[in-house]
Image (cartoon, rainbow, N blue to C red; front, side):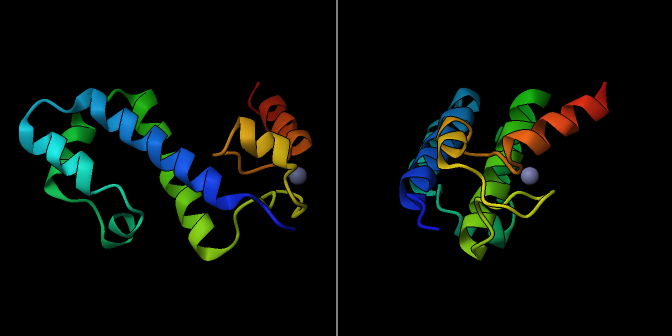
Length: 116
Ligand SMILES: [Zn+2]
């Protein structure tokens, strides 16, 4: 399956930067945002600035960053766009609406139903 992965990856990086920007307070933080947004940093681990910025985010925002990071890693490893539960391709329309989706719509609904 051919996915417009580059577009989705660019969107994910923008979302990630916007989340961190809400927590940026100093010039150093802003400089970090401009330079340190590539997924390589995720593999190398968290920098001091990243830890400090994460500290200022609320739980929901932290979960969003984690979901974005794991989507970026799946793009790198080539497992992006495959449903974690049934193994089928996730429809591109769903990925465009929700680039961090790890399941197809049916499996996503099944998970939601289990949570209730
Ligand atoms: Zn599925």
